[in-house]
Image 1 (cartoon, rainbow, N blue to C red):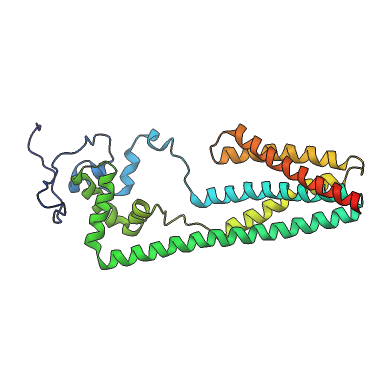
Image 2: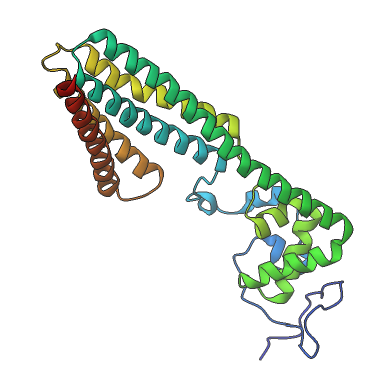
Length: 286
């Protein structure tokens, strides 16, 4: 039952539904939708009209910047790896010898090598993802140039699958295509924000520098105290810092903090225990 004849104009393009299917003439109540999708083409407005929405409309939007999250992830993981790797190295060497020179040389060499390896690996990994994004965008751009009508149908279909009525899906697809077809398809079809592609250089630098900063702590903790207590001081400092980075990693990823912290402590503690055992055996044999 309808309240009266609809004044909504139908899409100007042919119906691409399967033979025998009827075009939908009703859809969900669009009260509260932005004006751009409430009343068909007569209600298409300039993006500036979004200022008429109430302030709370964007109050709880979450930050979804891929680049920002990628930098945070690389920084936290790099710092955590720097602490764990360097701690395992210096504790193993400290168990084998009391020579401060040997400790400093081994720790510094491992710290620099690990930092360069971490940064290079992060760059390679993120660059591969960036290449994949750009390849997908090139393909999508070519399709928009050669088969624009089919691509518009495809975009409407994607919004149809998200729950919009056929009529409303066509209107939304048409307006977004007119505004920025590539951005619309990249977001809806590929899950890519064309304005926020992965940045391999940023991720690489974040990872390498955070590894260096993380690795400095166990190196100083094992070099500065007297030889008799250096291992104990280093272990305590490392476990404390790993608890912090585990908590920070959980906050960045919105995961349970207790589980992430415990996991960090087990991995770091286990690493130091294994290298300490190796160093102790080497000390006895030598």
